[in-house]
Length: 296
Length: 290
Image (cartoon, rainbow over all chains, first blue to last red; front, side):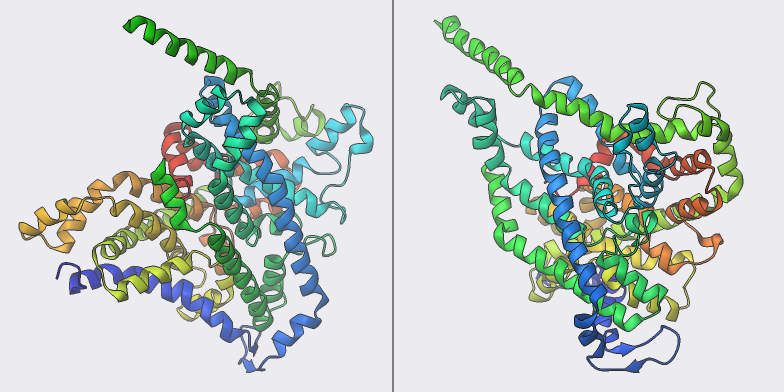
């Protein structure tokens, strides 16, 4: 009896379901319907069947933006993972100076992506920006570049700024993960004569397996939503050099007012996100993660 | 006998500490270098926001100004900053309150009810974790328009609540599961209803978790950019991240004023970090490192 739904429980769970269905799940499903429309958001929508979906395959910008998204995904993962892993292991040590450093590492997380985008676009400004001024002052003028105005560099520059913003968060995850490794394992290894680097590769790294998965999953799905920073720093440019999928979707739907075609891109975005989550969960499994924690 | 047995242990521990601090001399060096890369841009933000316009153009950009001035902050405050700030406070506080309130009641029901329906509802919330805001924004824009709340603070609050719910429910379910069954049973013997259990048992016992999810959601909502960008239009409903971008249009050349606005826009989070670092850290990593 106690485990059944009664009217009180129905009253308690309904608001959350209502909010979630009306403003999150429902819109996701509606995006599916929209993807069959030719609609500018104002006029009467016209049902066009699969034409938006067919257009995606012939739209070279859509293909390009998917490639750029993939590139961004790999780039940000490659930059963030080793750095946050090392920093996390470093900060997990008990020395006081490390925890003080940790306080300062954390600051980038306090600002919105919009604020960070603006600040970095001035730091990287080709004329008076901090980065180029430093290079000139150090006599390394050849290293001074137009970081966000150069189509060859813009995507890399943005990937670095994204890493700057989110490494603190992943460092926290790795720090927590490292602290959960039992000291006994290290002690046993030391008795067997393991040295620093060996201990890192044979104990720390394997023990952090689940943290690496969690952090990577968050990075990869997160890279599908890097919109704010791109919008503020380059707006997808120069040319289309940073037109990653979320940016292209926004441009199509809200600037060119092609709601139907934008919805196709939105669905592709969601499907990639959900597939990524499923694949990663399959590899590790949250259940396994829990039992591992219990073992500790 | 006892003392001799204890000695090797102490000896072993000392040896261990020495060994550990000796390993990887490169790691502390890397740690220090990272300090430069991670904190210096923030420091640059601060010192530049305290420069005069002339000082910015003529001074040494990487050093603090010899004559710091708060004038830029005054300029920002005179440009409707309080209004935007207040909008952000209203949206964030109301959203966070609603998220936490509806999530904790659902999490309670999910933990305490063993029916297929509730199990299914929980799974639906879990699927919701994978929905990126970007993927639903077009229908949300249409829906908010149809509901007549486009360009209002309410129109920002409603979808923000929806997107905060899945992760919050998941985290709270994990915590409420830890409450021993006996507590519920003894309260049930006294004839306490589900509402009573939520109020006098679940909420007091999960307070730390509630604080964490509240902070996590506050940061998310305060810094959200896409909803305000798409769902509002006029300055009277402008919130912080959008305000900063609009200042960029207004003060294009006056970088110090703009960076003062950037610093002010993060003020609640900076203050939270300075005074309640522990809670903010917990809040931000809620659910990921449990």
